[in-house]
Length: 178
Length: 263
Image 1: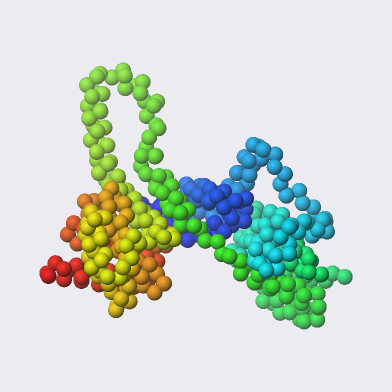
Image 2: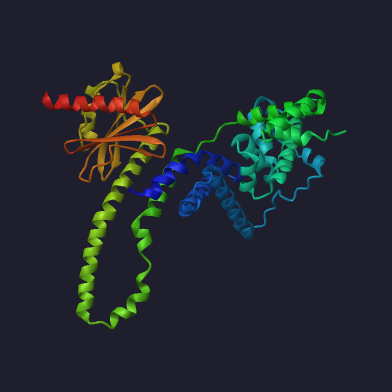
């Protein structure tokens, strides 16, 4: 009946869950993640002719990411919110020493929530490569395409993200115990 | 001291190096404590991250997106907003040409409405059905009358819906009657009979239909739909079960309608 719509539903919508998961890690709140996903899916639909056999999942995630940055820029213009992006990679210690928060003691009971928090605290450029690699199971080439950086950068960000995750994880979970 | 092979060990863990280099690197890892620790850490982190609560797109969001897509492809959205520039040219022509033009335009619009909008209505109907199915899966939305007894469900519809569909409990055949619900669909109170098949919920919608027939089988957003008609009553079964399971229930219902008819 409507060819474009049915092809879109068959090729792109199966990745809606992945898009939502990714959006949840980028957007500051679940409702903003909802808006982000809807915005991105509509854009994807309008530009669907441009996909032409490329990997639909990587393509949709790229659009999610672009929409996220557009929204973020608009928000920045409205209010000056300091973003955690001015992160210096050599400054590893400062990062590990981030405030454990008042619920540090109860964290060991809920490791899952702790891990989510640790992940949420990572600098965005590290968090996104980690999510794409570990949760969405994308390869380096797709991650490079989505985040628009060379593969070498993907590898170094991934390595830093993993080291930071481990360091933060150890301070949050085991730190208070010692 | 930091091992120079750490980056390659990471790539090895991510299965990003070829078999030959992998074999070579495995030899190194066997003797390098640092690389062994890294591999172990990578494995621990990955399994922890993959154990996180998997976020699936909420059903409301899915339904909202489908609606937005409907608006996106409706012909009304794309055809309006152009003829402003031609307005002046029309005025220099005789009145009657304009009048005929108007009539012609009406005919074209009617034809467009018939050929374009009628199928779109249909297509919107399928989306409404999926949205209703998804909504029913949200907590406390599934059934209005809980009963496994057809003699409770069927009369309940008499007061709550505009149609009276066939209601039979097929527990013996694997489709347990859970209850009934009234949903507002196509400007009327449709009757929904809810079945359970294993862990899956099947909603069987029914309403009096005057539109062109819906496709016998179709898929929307991953949900399978089977539509059929008994006289002027349109049925549509929606679920995330497999085709065979859905077909099983549809066949049972069709047989039951045929029996009702004869009895």
